[in-house]
Image (tube, rainbow, N blue to C red; front, side, top):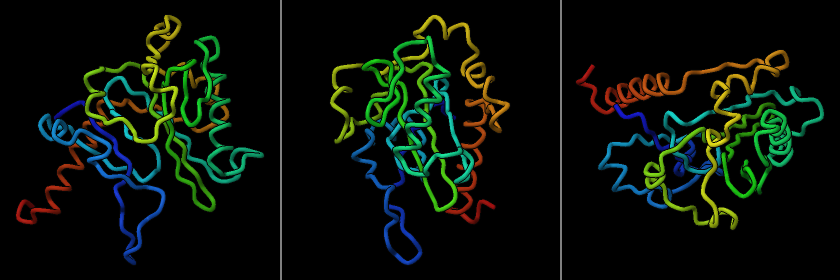
Length: 216
């Protein structure tokens, strides 16, 4: 079992009527270094929400908002308003840490990206999530290909590690970020590594059972 995972946007999922499910698409060969991923046995997971391709490991902090349409007063359930709202919220949480800002569709400190975003919006509900880089191994990033349409500012900078800031070293990896907001939102803190490995183990067992009925 590996503690690294590549999370990939859904690859041309098919509806039951044969039509493509718009919004989530991407060819693995355009997103990841397929040969290296297969050689090193890195699991690849498709997700239903739009967004980019990310590496998930023990240095990743997931943040997700799962909301009904009227949960946030005055917020219109469209990508730009949601991103504006989450950007303001994260700006409050990370105040004093650095020059936090929104850069196009990224969360960044100055010119350095620290997290992207993925969203799925239906008539009455929406989800917005991101994976913040608490830390990362440069070698793991080599499993990913550069996006064909990336913001220009990324070409001249390296990703930002939240751990780089000394003020963050005194915090408990995200737990203390959300404490002031627990009275307003239903918040669940999930240990990433252990749960990820259990989920992957269960998923691989189900996949094996579905492709090899004799294994049951």
